[in-house]
Image (cartoon, rainbow, N blue to C red; front, top):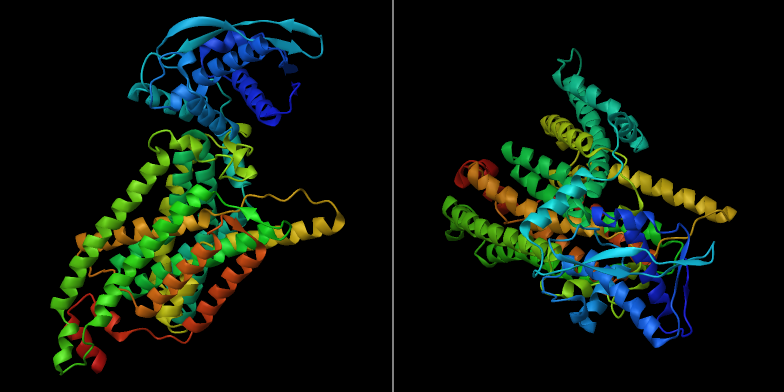
Length: 588
């Protein structure tokens, strides 16, 4: 498909708009356009003449199409008629359309009028002028009923091909070669429930190892299930579901550690998850994605918001840590020993619960902002002056691809996977004493335990990197992508702003003294990591050197954490019994 213009002004922009408009008409969700769609030739070219009236008429028809199909449907401001569209509003709408990330909704109840669109059949050389019924809106915005109907149409895929149960099960089974590791699940369960005849430590170590390995394919299934559900939920809710499911393993481990009153290990694990998602995971992604291209792009709008959210979440941990450090850290039997008391711990618990509620409110507010940006600025996110080319005109995965799994099969798979993962994670925690004899609790929580969900992705990334390097050496490689993978940073933000305060509140409800008073060493690590991530992503561009630097800093943390034994005062404050008893037991 091409566009004929006497002037080169905005020719590329017009071509993309016309192509997208035709693609929209060829895949409508409204029954009104079924007859019109069937009359469109398969191979068509839009011809824009240099005659002023002809060009204006084509633009008028284009405005009708865009207004009916997208602009008015997503705009909160009323449009009295198509001719009332201001240039700024229409320009914003065109900018959003060029991203090709819009849904194809059905129109709200409106009155009808007729319009025509000239289409030239390039094969026959003849002009056809099919009639097209265009709807003009009479209401300001969408009603709740139409919004719900659009979501239902997308979720049920009305008018589109549906995936069968057998095909869905096959797609799940062959979604990743990591599914071969699922055989370790029954082995881990047998090792947990079987009473050994030999060495108990060896048996428990085997149960721990197989439970650890079992979490790798389960986390990959969560990722795959979230990606498939995004086809039925849309890009916004789908992205939120993917992020939540990717944090499912870590959140489940945190809840289990809370119920077992392993609070120090829980805090180390929280910090380890945040460090992993901030440094190693995006670092590896930037290396593998940027080794064949000078630089990759991040979305500038989301990057700026992420920097704010990440800084707030991390700096919140500094407040109670600085509060604790500013007090008199005395020893037992002296005047300063009042710091390590149940009374002081109660104050930190109240402080932490208030901070937890505020953090959750910040996260909810950020999600509302991303889901429904206020005013018309939501259409300017990918403006040409801000967003790079790769973000202005991407290939929309949710529009160009079809789901491989039925939504009902996918929901059932996720429910079953959550149950299996929860039980396997519990068996992992049950046999954790064996590992604590080898590693310190701080190093185990900071480094080893968070790797359970990343080991599979890391190995897949390494295999991908090696394969692409070999293909590049042979001259067979595909063009590298310019879009950087920044989702791991989103995972750490959700874990910091939602799951961490949620665990604090859950400890409040279950009478566990879980607080936001973390070890000062761990707080320093996560603040420095936040600084590095914000500095790397400040220009919304990354390269493989920055990815290597992030990974190198994570290795530094792993090395130094090996020799760290923890802060005794924090250990006493996290004791599930009395703080005074914990201090006395520690002195003995």
